[in-house]
Image (cartoon, rainbow over all chains, first blue to last red; front, side, top):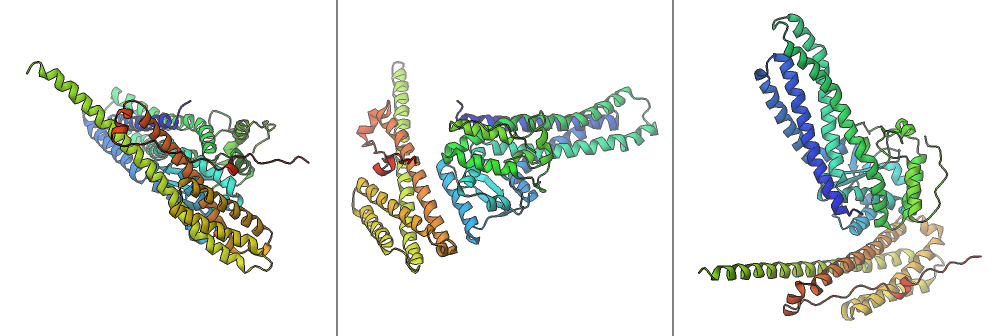
Length: 320
Length: 187
């Protein structure tokens, strides 16, 4: 059984690897685009340099500002514990469970949305934030909310949040960038070739093809990375969250409520979907068990929790 | 000189081992003290919250006075046990206080006017949360004691522990009332 130290160490390794891969893809893309545009390897050098710098800046931005960007994108506002009983309770639950997990208390945020969901983000436990939707605060009781917060704090403790944050920030900007290049290769690049100034440069043509191939492949590859990691992490966070609360039924009931919620969380995008407690984009849920899912089906998660306390699994309920 | 060098190296290594073992013991002892301090902070917070709740509930028509009195009494006993008594005495008094608070919460449930009173519900939430925090802090305290005691009793710490006065610490024991499994009535 892997301890959370192992899991955290693995996430640190994977985070570093992700940064290296993303920068490598970036440099490869920019260099081949540069060769395609200028015609020679030497004159493509500025493209390489700029892309290195860009990768460095992207990583710096993701590291220090990624959590704020993700929270701002979700429209999350800091929780005011004095505002009322629900706010007070949420703040208390986070305090209690951070104590149980022996973590510094993360900052708590509220997303003003009636959909039921939650996520955690940050680069390490000392710079972590937990956000829940207002709908979740209204619909869950104390035990259920404890289950959700326990799940999120497990992500914090395992450093899943660091990897998830880097995926959101880096893969998101990579997708944006290759989109730009793809467009330029079709329009700008096409015009330039038709000028016929540099003649039929075979090397140039080869790199045009390569640039396009890379631009198409890069986001797909990145997306695969994002998907492969996320599902197993959810099962793990469920299990270790229950270890904190010592109450599998709380999380079980919370998941049942989340599964019954048909509402789409508007603020969640493809780049941040993997951060959430349950998949915020509901039309993906139908093929949740498939290869392209960021989250395991909720019924499966509930049944695993039931197994923890020796209860019989529920009959496969149809999820939508 | 030639023969002195190996001896110096061995002495140096031994000194390093001693220093790191000593530092490990100090760190462990500080962790235990910190965990204990954390529990005291929360117990204090609980003492501060109780009079407010008693005050808020007191006005309720027909509320059983005996319940409030026993909470107030248990609180006073816990405070004085914390100031003067041994750790075991304090744990016992705290346990009595927890029990009387549970009775109070259960009584509040019976009054719809109290349940819809924001102030009462908020105080009750704060007390329930403090109670949970105390529980988790005790868990944390026991974990720190376990790791500290292990380093005191195992090699190489055991060599220095006695010389420098590092004594094993006591675990916090769950009081008997909490150890007893809840009775389930099947009828």
